[in-house]
Length: 300
Image (cartoon, rainbow, N blue to C red):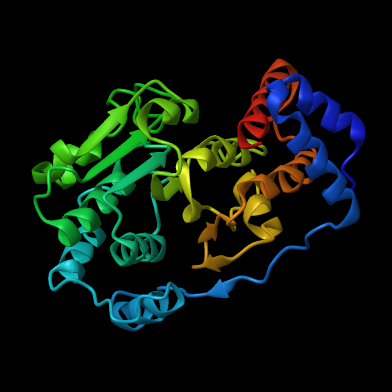
């Protein structure tokens, strides 16, 4: 897909004047060379019985080959497997294992999640952080959702499963509702986050917008885990993962993409992906386009 100068001019309108030289240079670079999608490394977690083997494979991919699962990790995952209720939109078990291992291997002290829903994935992430860091008061998970009442259980608050599944870890988790990914600028410092998880609105270009809003606050070389990369429709997460031109790891319906050392190279990539038809129409699509261009300006 070509990146037109007209599209770049629309970007400039939403960017600060000081960022114009960088944006124009990136446009020129994009015209010369289009980065093709990269080939994903594969690491799937098909069962709890093979969890240690898959964990070791993922640890090696992430350059942490000495990492082993904590002694009580599999018992925690079995508890999640046999939880009382499974709500629509929740992580599948294989995705749960991948996310748990990824968070445990990287062992960040902070994670930001976009898309809370019932809070199941937040409970899983909180468990991984607690097993790695113990009772460290500086360890925190911030989870953000646009709805105060849960989308799939409207009589209950967003994130209600956190207190049900991991009551002992509830103080570690901060639920921010009703907010979207723009809130991250109030929660994190630039280049602070090592790991973020995006599992919110999958309609293109929402996952791209979430990524771009988080990118300034994610470290160079930091990781973003994306859920539903094989969902089909809506296809936003799938298109983002499949077109990603930098390092990425596929765990089946869940995957992780790594930010490049120079985050401004995301600008031409994002503009190309924005050329795909939005799965949102009307006034909301126009607002999304403006938000995307503003986010690109923040990368320059």
